[in-house]
Image (cartoon, rainbow, N blue to C red; front, side, top):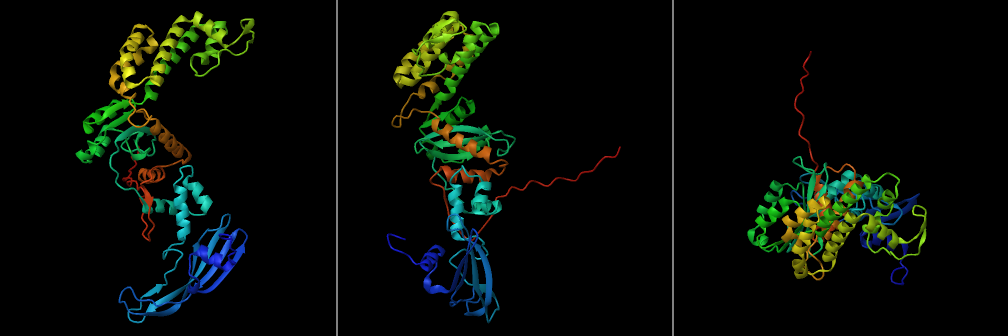
Length: 453
């Protein structure tokens, strides 16, 4: 049924084959197991030679097999009895045009479009698409190389820069791909085969200065190369550090202190037990400390989480001091505006510096070296979004997952096309009868002369 109206079977088949009823000379449909077979012959039409433009005459038929899976759960095959033509003057031959696919193609337009639809979803590897649609990985790669179009995009106003690790996809002996994200439009902007200073300088230097001047915000992790390049190529921008990275350094310092104190305790002692089993009371958020009391076999009495927390604070004053500093800084990050954070920053910095907690030394250096960039992360130029790389990390997660499940990815050009097609709405596909391949060919190995002993 279609729109509440019953459609005859023949009309339904004609519809899914994308042909005009008046063009059909003969149509036969059958089902063989899980395969729907369409045997079809079209009426002869006037045909003119591509070379001398004279009228051609009939010259027999040729049977073509075309994959056309248009019914869910069934493999579809079209056996097209194609009319052949010959020119009486130059004797060139030609097959009739058909509504199913391009000449010399074995997959229908519908199947190609289905492949492009699957490529939009990075949860599908090429092997998965190949098995799902019964099409070779080589064909899929050729469609990626030939049909995906990635237009030249203008630099965004808010540029997020980060990286993902991949030894197989990077080049020039690098280990990281550079990922750039449009923070305003919430999408992947571009991806480069290396995060090296030379690669990034070469990329940004090719962009017009006028376009680079429009970049107002750049969010990065604490890699100095990104900061230097941002200042050099985007003179009007504000550079901000992603809060996740400096908070991670803070929490790592606190964790090192806990482990160092635990390692000083006798194994199996109450002190070791507290730091090993109950450490989450000092590290996790939103814990209900006032739960019901239960019997604790180590202390031989009924205790709740608050009692355990107080015992830890009393027995490990240095850890408790570190905890209070950590939470004060995290509270500033969560609740303060830019101006409030700026007013508190120096005082909090001095508290960390004067605490004498050596596990916080790295974090103290970060607070001193990256002060402006950390404070800039409190700005909210777009609605309620702070200047962070949260979106970049989210996209990085998708890219990492795709790299992991697609074992053996080595072609960066093809990888870039697919991920931009999946994660940037400006990328699109355009089908034509021209196929090409971006297959990477390794240089040939030179002659090898074995030295006899």
